[in-house]
Image 1 (tube, rainbow, N blue to C red):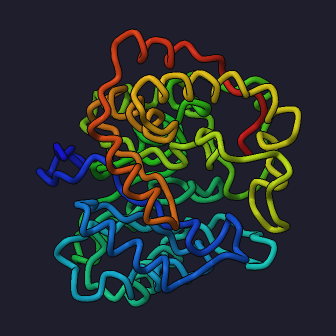
Image 2: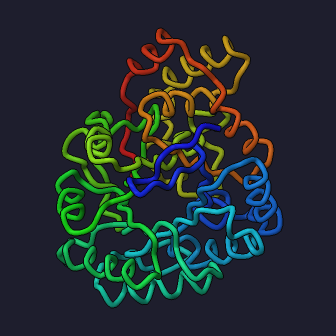
Length: 337
């Protein structure tokens, strides 16, 4: 796999990473299997995947401990990315709040180091900007942790261009993580129809323009999470197929009306997949990889088979006409939070 730059400090990584959140919480938690998930992580490393993505809030530390266990003895093969700035209030209901206070971020970094079993975090994101704390204070505290050798590089998650500019002026932003896929194109300046979102602490931020272009212009990697539309783009889900507690069970974009109105997106993806004897997931990832050379998607999976398919997407060459057809897909209906 041709590697892509993670910021401007010379670090290059495989073009597809692994999002690990769903191994611990958010999706079908009744089927959680730590042993199987640890094996998928190790299989990802065997396949050349380097960037593993987690966060302190995923399972309130569980996901970081899982990754720490899986990478034991293989530290040199891994670029570990985790996040802080969100605090779990109730694990069962996934209630959380934003906390960008410097002392909170310093404590969260120490806790993450311990759970991951590493002495340095390769990429540390501010998971969400706390509206009650100036971003200069949060980012300045994280920059101090870089100077102290606790963190190697810094990233931002779900931010506006204005917030990215403010942080970048203080300390270089290596990566910005945001939701980007064929049905979530907000970072391109294209918002979904009926995009009024909820007020959850983990909800997204309006980028205020073409955030992907900003990252390209500033030498910042763009790391799309949920690049397969939380599974929707695979064409394998149904609106009634989610258990209680699954994030998608109450998500507006997975409601029956939105599910039906967005069918045109999955239909076109499936047609292109059939033409290549590929999967819809592979087409969705190939579209992202071709969209910009600084994009490093992190599809999540607990399946070794799906992991292999996702990695193979790097070899799928879409034609210009197919890329254009995907570019021109209708915006998705329904808020993503």
